[in-house]
Image 1 (cartoon, rainbow, N blue to C red):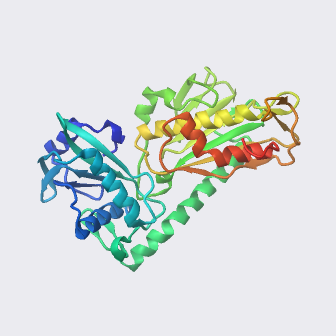
Image 2 (image 1 turned 120 degrees about the vertical axis):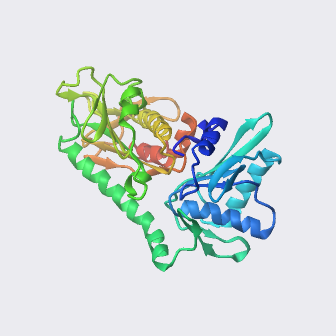
Length: 382
């Protein structure tokens, strides 16, 4: 189900039954909760690790099925909050490495009756091994259910994560080269610019093959506004996907900023005019723009079904001989930091294992990146 977990309700569950959505690589039904025996716990760990090691998916507890076809809702007769905590604890202690962003949602089906939906993300830190009772077993998943992968499949699982990380870095620097040479998706007002790349790991995994809905994006253009803009002044569908622009006239040769959303879900946001005439760059404005934009873009991607880890990459271009202006920890404003000697600054990436729920959550998740930007201005931390 490519729906945000919070949007799943009893109508969605009933629809799975009415259209006979059978079990697959991405979905599995369980009539009853997992028991407390060692075999039951091992079965639960095998189920969620097989999903994480393959393509991710949903494990729905409280729906009966016959030969993989759902036949009806069977509400769980347990303390639902205690059961959530029990499953979370089992997953946390029984797998190595742990699965990031494992989500368990209770769905009200009638009065005080619930079904549990466990959303297991496709993992890019796989393979996950069941270590409960020293079982040391790996599991994968196909349309026929879970199975133990052979040596070749395990080799692929171990190599997939590093290969995707390399693809992400290659994409970043190929795009930086185009923007720096003036060949970005739009010409900018000047050469000093902030570049933010928001990269869902699914976008670099051909097995995921997810594409963002351009039709939905065109009807909701403010999901991806340019940096420092609360709204999108103009937007277009283009070869790469969807582009939002800072200026109302899309034909204007130079734009202050733009956001290109690729069909794969990759977001490239670029803002120029970030320096004053005396070559000062406002440190706080840069950091606020990064936090606000990343919160907005990752939340929007979540609405379009991208719940896997998302990589954030930030660069400053054309900044040689510039300096940062900032407020000191004592509250005094300084318009002079050390002069920058490099024209391009590429800060270390940050990975969101789940979309931040608030601005404070976003700042906390990006602390290492914000500190590195502050370090460039001569400050110990942001």
